[in-house]
Image: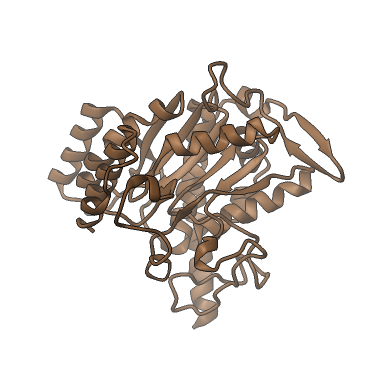
Length: 345
């Protein structure tokens, strides 16, 4: 039964990849063939982007793929203001909600609501994928989101993927990146995200162990990943940022398609690790944030003044809390209390 299940999973994965081919072929050849620039650093190389900062001191232009489900209309409405205003604390930011267009048995009124939302706000991208978390569906969604980025938003040096239940302070993140730049550290040669919640006892020493229990939602078969530990990977929900040239190489060289893991965030870590085959090494930069799950909820405050709430990204939040935190952050109201924001969780 185990091997039959693996065979069925492989067949389903192949069918999903074949469904993506028309979309992949549509990519701009010019965008894909654009050469990489490197700077040698010892025995490794770092990807160096054409634009490492904006002339006015802002942060590099960034495209943000906000992952959301078709039915999450209320959540999108609550966080839309945050993403519409993302450029205020950053510079040029374009955020789009990523929605899979391949659905079965969806009620007509739901489809009509989504189309009306897309027409009204113009911030939804419909991708050729299926929603879900099993059988690598979410990983495949990341792949087609990267294709969309390379085809339509390749003018942006940075690519970010984040979930729709994550609060992001673009102002604080830009300050962090500018601090790196002012210290002589590159922005474009980095893989940024929440790798470890150090105050909760996590460390970036090595990656997580692979789960081989087929009944677990985090199950990974040997067919898709043989090692017993993943490379150090940024958590998927709070989001991760990659430079354009790294995304291009991941797609162009087929790294992503050859490594469609069940766990999306771990797949991205594998893709980044595979870049070393092409003498490309990205420095991992830990962003102060949390995945918001129970075993990590004790180390950051949910009461008190905003200036004492240190997080740049905070995952696993309802839309009301995200909207509340964004309003305080946007107002630069360091002395304002955050208590009421978290009373809604």
